[in-house]
Image 1 (cartoon, rainbow, N blue to C red):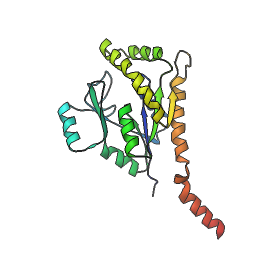
Image 2: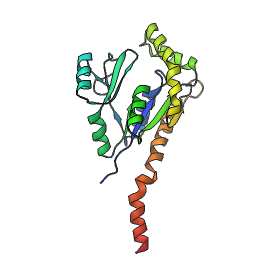
Image 3: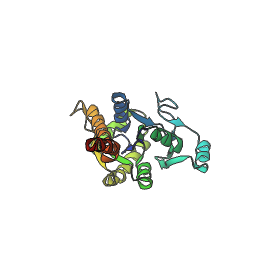
Image 4: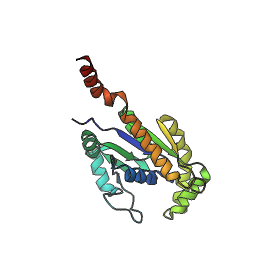
Length: 212
């Protein structure tokens, strides 16, 4: 029987590069799965329903909340995001290590209710770099950028409550910054797989054979 999978939550300020890091990690390491969240925000250009997010209406989101269907959910930048319990439990029970790419509020909820959750916080190298990244998307209004930048200080303050912090360096200074950040995130996953709790059955069997 496979060991139960572990849950890893990757979050940080909008524009820090969470999505790019997770995409690169999943592409490089298909042994890690990504949980697709629900959101009430409109799709951005190129986003696909069921792949990037499950895009739902406010009414549908309300119904899911009423059904207690979410593992966690939160208001973020005037929209709502949530992770379905069913998705998380199915993947973990099958032994898959699972990533949730969610907001800071959701990560804190997840870590509060489950001590085995590993929190990974993605930081930009500077405020200036973060603003450039937000503007470079070409999908944000000035009002949206202002709201997101105003929220950054509070989001970064929560990083002290996480287990790991990854600094996503400026691509102009570190051309392979994305690859580095993705591999740092995978290193966390790999290290947790090697913990004694995941090796106990093997050690018990080895010890028994050595005594025989």
